[in-house]
Image (cartoon, rainbow, N blue to C red; front, side, top):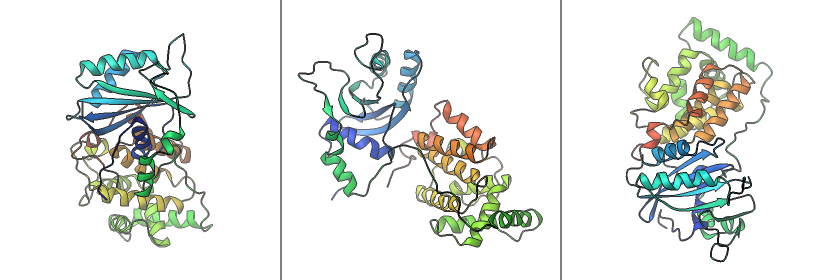
Length: 339
């Protein structure tokens, strides 16, 4: 079996989208660049809520032209909203602006589809004789979806994240606070080494190490350093690390990033409420670096629910709310490749 997937129909492309995103999009515009007869980069954005069609179209063109090999694009609009004001389709004016803007940018829109919770159809053709409405089962029951599942791929119904409620020992908070005091008073706990071991073992963390690491992540200066070491393992401080936060000029070891997220998820299950925010924020930041802004946003929201006003989560949430894509994700040579 080769790594290549044979895509022969629009239903195949629509089957591919949730697998590459990791979740089934809703109320979204999903673009995929085309490189002649091959699929390129995938971009998902929330369905537009305002009437600035030209501005939205320009922003999409700016993102898509980051794929220097692209010579076209396709679009899937996921929505259950009806058409309004006599328009032939939902988001009609936005789609028309996209067609015009992408054509001017040299990456013309090759095809587009409207996908609802029940059916899908061609978005650029209104003649039902040649472009009939098709059941959503044509997507989920297709050969490509079966092939992706056979290869071990899966996706969630939503980009959201959920973690089980804490059910650890009653004295966990006391243990974490005691470890935090040790961190502040001595060098008995080496947080950098503990974190490196946790990343290497992909989340198999002893209860004692979990308590100490949870304490480390409550200490802002050390938290920032531990986050930096996911990308640059030899760092001993977070000084001058702003470019890491933004994802500029870096070439991550993505296997290490996946290991860090696994370790953080393990620590979250060991963390009582109000002690999870740093870990949720870090997972979200790493998803941002991967170009998975929807999943990142869910983690920042969860962090702020765990600890209202958590500043790092607020900063990251503000960053992605402006549609910022991490430069490392925008560059194919450095971007994340889903295993």
